[in-house]
Length: 243
Image (cartoon, rainbow, N blue to C red; front, top):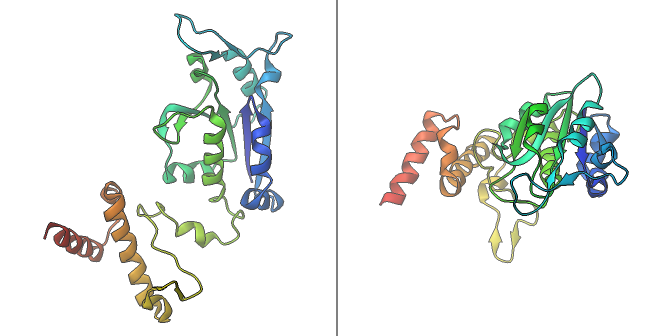
């Protein structure tokens, strides 16, 4: 089982997502558990204040370090892996998601306002960013991490192979997918997918994944494990583009 501890000022934001679809099934199967911790309950003053003006001046408010650290320390001696969701963090990737999925407990710290007091970094294991943009808080980013990590935990999806064949797992974008009907408004499913020739289908899917990655995310090809056949196919695509 993978247990997520979610430290947030707005625990109510998580209720609907954690109780639906894959995440709900993962909990029912005993593969996932989620514990919500309201950072505000760890503030020591009577008004439960968790933010204050930034030293040195500036716009907005900054989250105080003491309620966050108190919430982390209250998680107990097991000490889950502590992740701060932050636009300054390392980019979140499929490889990173797979590494987190192998842990037993993870604590996700959700920031708000203009940011979190820098001293909190001394009490977490890493900072993670889901992209080069700014959100109102870390809650949405935490849900992205939860979704990406949870689907890699054994027993969550039910069919483990489905997670192994998705985009980025082999360093490539996923091949195109089709289902019934075989023709829709003049658009036909590729004949090879209807042929029953599994070797031809596998070859087509690999080539389509290579083509899609080449056209949309060529940067991924530098780190992808490629065969000689893959390289020959990509060289042909490059030749067509240059020609």
